[in-house]
Length: 67
Image 1 (tube, one colour):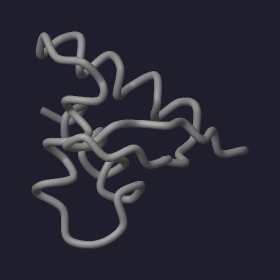
Image 2: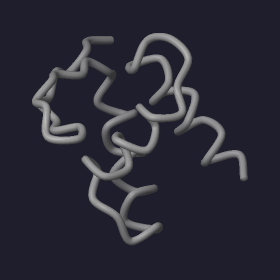
Image 3: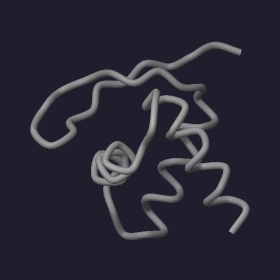
């Protein structure tokens, strides 16, 4: 399974995040359900994380889909 790299803006700073395409799709679905942009949701995940942003996104998506 390959990673997909995307540029995102977090608090005015541009960075890139690499996660699997399935996680990008699920993250987009969660963002839409919550009425937020993917960038806004990633910024929230970034503020709450301990460690790697890509891993934090994966854990967030997993937890969101379990709820």
